[in-house]
Every structure is written in structure tokens, then in C-alpha cells.
Amino acid sequence: IGSMSRASESPKKEFKEAINAWKEALKYAKDDSYRGKIYDNLGGSYKMLDDFTNAINSYEQAIKLRPDAPWTYNNYATGLLRAYKKDKDNEKREEYLDKAIELLKKALSLMDFGMAHHNLATAYGYKGYLLFTRGNLAEAERFYRMAIKEDSSLHWVHYWLGILYEHKGDLIKAEHEYLWTLNLKPDFRDVQD
Image (cartoon, rainbow, N blue to C red):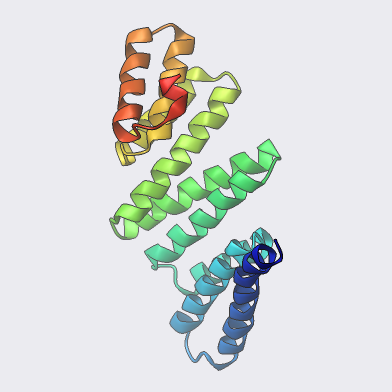
């Protein structure tokens, strides 16, 4: 048990060390482009420690310094998606999702890359789920459909779209989505049961 505890602390220690190193590097950065890259890396390190306030501040600095860097927008959005999963305040969670969607659209306007499509699909899927839990089935369906359009490989989006169709009484569409779910993840127990 002691070694497991030390193992889980090791990455935290490494991210804290990385933060110190990035802060030190900022002192020597000669131009905005390099400082922007450092702030992007700082944001990533804070994100991995679930320090979302500092992560957001770092990503905001990175974007000010490098407004044309698509990966920075993507990285910032993944921090917000991580914050969404950790936070229990639904109002804040929705703010995280809306901002993540905005950032990912910006990233894709700068460069078309698969990771941003995948992350945008994830954000749309989370938004669909949030709307579904509020009983807003029409908007939830719209967001699930947008998620599938961005990346059809997210089994859980198909699953929740199937649940939504089942709630609406459309068992044919529900079965179709459940079959998609199993096609993508054959061992997904929730559909098998």
C-alpha cells in the first residue's frame, strides 16, 4: 500500500517540478511566441494537478501571446473538459462546456486536426448529457448528433442517444444506437444487459 501511495504522488511531484521549471523558463524567454508556448505548457501542468484556476490563467496568457496557435485552444479546451468532469456545480460545468466548445471551434478554424474534432465531439456529448438530465430531449438529441458528426467513434454518445430515443418511445432508433454502441465497444455491459 505504501508503494502505491508513493506511485500516485510521483506524477504530482513531477508536475509541480515542471511548473517550477516553466516559471523559471519564463524569466529567460525572449519573445512572445516562446512565452506563449511556456504558458501553454504551464496550463497543461496545472491541468494535470486539477488546479483549474491556474490552468485557465496560463492558457489565457498563452492565447494572448499566440492567438494563432490551434493547439493552445485545444489544450485549454481539454482542461475545461477535465474541470467539467471534476466539478459538481452544474452551472459552472455548463460554462466550462460552452467555453470548451468555443475554443475548439476556434482551434478548428485555424487548423483542421483530428484531436480537436474528437475533443469537440466529447464536449458536444457532455453537453447533450447535461441537457438530457434536465429533460431537454430535443436539444440533447441535437448535441448528440453534432458529437457523432464530429467523431462517430464515441460509443457512449451512441449509448446515450439510444437512451434518449428509448425515453421518446422510438425503439427502432434506440436499437440502432445500441447496436452502434456494441459495434464500437462489444464489451459495453450497459447495452448487453
